Amino acid sequence: MSTPISSIRNLGPAMESAFNAVGIATAEELRALGADAAYGRLLSAGSRPHFIAYYALHMALQGRPWNDCKGEEKQKLRLIFDALKASRHDKGRSQLEAALDAIGVVEKKA
Image (cartoon, rainbow, N blue to C red; front, side, top):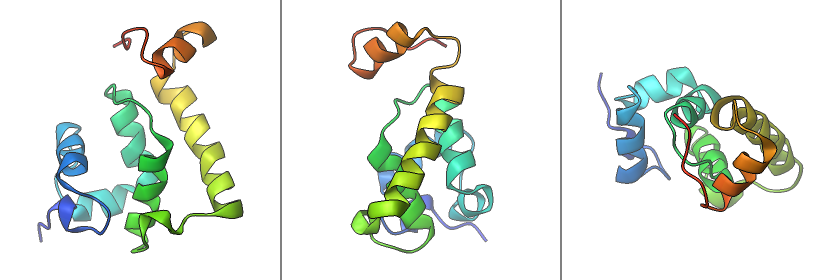
């Protein structure tokens, strides 16, 4: 079966396009990979990290509203997000370069 990613609650055409660009073409593939591995692929491909998109993805794969993530659950996801970001997006960068990129001052490294 081949269901579009945008058929998953909270995930629209922009997320579908981003996932398609990193080789995740269907909702089934996305669910099989899981939120962390899928988001890691986006970061490795140069997508700018965004915590709300990350936890909205988690909520989407659980069939929950994007804004249902609160309290301790949100804090735990933040720790995982920060680790993913450090290992995938900021790898090979100095802390200064990573901070400048976070505010949009320097170009992303390939």
